[in-house]
Structure formats: C-alpha cells, structure tokens
Amino acid sequence: MFWKNWICAAVLLVAVPAAAQVRPGLLNPNKATEAQLDLMPHFNALLAQAVIAKRPFAAPTDMDKVLVGSLNETQRQQLYTRLFVPLNLNTATADDIMHIPGMSRRMMGEFREYRPYRSIGQFRHEIGKYVNKDEVARLERYVFVPEK
Image (cartoon, rainbow, N blue to C red):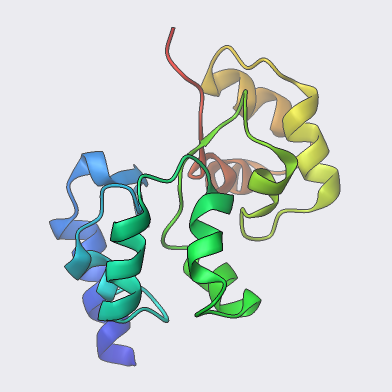
C-alpha cells in the first residue's frame, strides 16, 4: 500500500499534465489516463475502465454514480481528496457541493449564498469570512469560476 501511495503521489506531481488537474494534487477524471486512474486509492483496472467508458462527467454526482457500486462511501470520500470533477461555483447543485470532502451543509449554503461569483478572488473573500486561508485554499482546489 505504501508503494502504491508513493507512486500515485509521484504521478500526480510529475506525470499528470496541467490540463488534467483541477489544482495541484487533484486529478480531473475527465482527462486522466487509465494508468493514472489505476493508481488512485481503491481503484483497479476494471474500475478505471468503467470511469473512462462513462465520461465525460458534468459533475461529481455523475462520477459518483459509476463508483457507488464498487466503492463504499468512506472509500469514495478518500478518493475525492485525490480525484474530483471540477465544480462550477455558479451552477453546482447542493449535492455536487456536498461531494467535496469535509463539506458541511452550512458551508454548502455559504457557497451558494454568494452566487453569482465573478472571480475566484470573490470566492476566497466570501468563504474566507467563515474559514481560515488554508481551508479556503483546500476548498478552492475543487471549484472554478467560468471565464466570461
């Protein structure tokens, strides 16, 4: 297990093209290769192939539907710390937002309260009212504001 985690970290930091990442260390399943998916926690070649066959995923809930038959909730939450479908802050549903690891209903409400977001800077400012900078940076890895 140690070696798989070490190899997975190395792949994320070195081999993953920038376009495949939401933020450093977080892999976008819509762009990941089968080999990259196979290195994810709780994954195997069959699950990687199933994910590839069902993409593109518009939202985390879409990918979750593919994984729910193979991984339990705890395993999926662990996986989502490494692999996640980027969330559009202005259109994400409550269910999509709740797929962010560690998300609370209260914070999900705060995400939605400040819509529409004009920039990621606005997200940092508004969400920074409720959590510290490290937590804002962690949450920011999962989201984006569409460019106009």
